[in-house]
Image 1 (cartoon, rainbow, N blue to C red):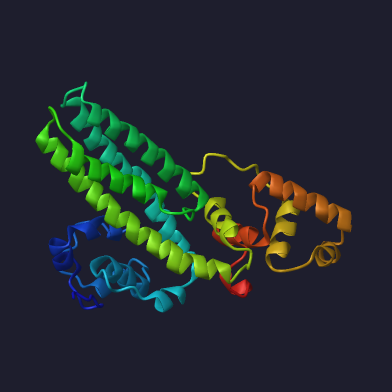
Image 2 (cartoon, one colour; image 1 turned 120 degrees about the vertical axis):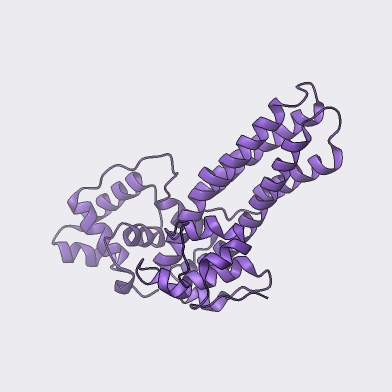
Length: 292
């Protein structure tokens, strides 16, 4: 089992494990690695070396998953990685698969019934993946199941006239996508979910809301909060009750309730745990100010 540490030469590792290229990209590391060790690359780039190693070793080793260790990292660090991976799945993996699949279909028999089914399955997969990422991707394994079906149909049932070279390219792309999605979901479910559940005992819906709250691909743009609404938001996120917020800001309880209603309407976030996440990711409070 290959197990990396700070003295590992990153370029040598990547040469033997090309699947790590998009993973290191999520940390802002580009190719042109030279002969530097992981420690020498992480330090000047302000990358948490232990977190970086934990993620890389998880990708390299099927049986390695430092669940307890990963849960000890700062929640902002984990959320940032999750969001960067979500963006890569949509703009990298999904785009790449769609490009290969479209080329495969255009170079093959347009009347092939199996190809029409493949095209339909991909559209279902694409929509399901985007929808679930926007919601936090915690409701089952539907995207992964659709991706598995897509590959299975190509391997087992495709017939007639089709471009074999492009067919191979599609299969390899799906395989890469599957592995990435499986590991991503494992990190999200085993690491992020337990960390966020420490903020609230409200369960799965909150996880969806927390992830979706500031997601880069979320389509609905939030309205700007007023300064007073920001004041209320920050205090609520720090754990103050409505009456305590009113006393702190020297305003009436009804005014606090009105501001909270406006905050919910503008942000689309209904729970306190969701507001906490929003405040942390937007810099209104730090993780140190609350008890995670």
